[in-house]
Image (cartoon, one colour):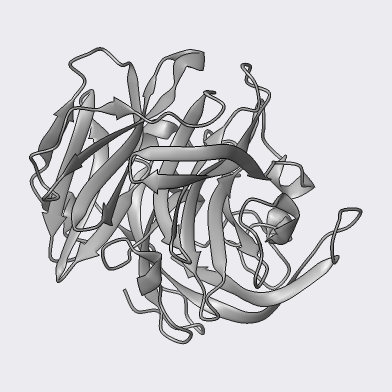
Length: 334
């Protein structure tokens, strides 16, 4: 979808009434993964907009009664495809993984990821940064639902976490605490900016409300991904439907409410193929059309675009390290 800054285009809604899109590109084919019917389905199409009409192919079924199946994420690593997903009930939600040599079938049985800490975990995904595999997810600090934080851990292989977990974000800013019980940071998605710095773009505020939005964590140049104070958080939502929570200089959406839980549509899902400065590139997100009651069952997949936005300062106070960091941020378009 091509848009201009002078006249924003109407949001490109697919016909797919669903949440939590995960999409990657393999050559000229777009591959999506979705939880459906107590299992996981894959679609393949020549464009993101054609995914909704593509035949879904079930690649995994919950034959062991794992419970609710949430937010599968498809990635490619070493020529093999991995789908990470959450399954469980209540406090028992944990991350699982299946793998295959091809994206649309032949997947292994699920195995639970032995994430450090062994706590409630959702929305996890794998990526490689500076030659090291990492896993980032949303979880609880303890055994009760106080708040959802973002955690990161090293991986020695696509299926083997190693070492400790490290918190990199907590929902403590006023603009990400508009809707809570619990307050949340979830749906983390890695991307690499034109300077090679790592960003984790995530969803904040309750997914059950139209305050749902996207925000950014930027790792300072040369920073340690496991050190929370090397991450700088955007000073507001970068993609949302309420002006009061938007970062200064960013505008709210015109056609949808509560955009969130997005997917950067990258070649092979690899952040090394993140877009350069200048062009706009596709992303997918879920949202509810304006004028429609905000409810989980009214969410659709949308195709939008994003681009890098330079010389953007993220500021903070009363924490270790410098109070401001300037670098690339992101602009999102419906």
